[in-house]
Amino acid sequence: MILWEEESLNDREKIFEFLYDFNPNAAEKTDEIIETKVENLLEQPLMGRDGIRGRLLIIPEISMIVSYWIEGDIIRIMRVLHQKQKFPMD
Image (tube, rainbow, N blue to C red; front, side, top):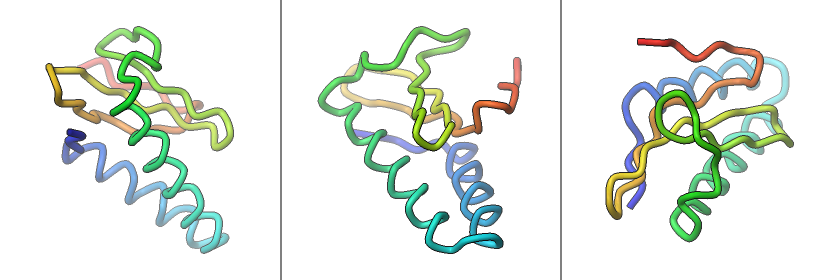
């Protein structure tokens, strides 16, 4: 099961709103790619690399990084950030 933490949902919303102002189609496509890539974690939860906290799923085609934790059968999506953003340390 994939569990989107509130902060990760807020990240997705900010990304969508930012892109939508410039190109609504790009906003939709980007969100679909994020959703699809994250759903792939159900089949291959270790596909991301080890990060400072948890694991990092890099999505190069849209320059995004998804931070996640694996807790048994649950994959917790913690953050979704652009590669140029810095992950908060707290």
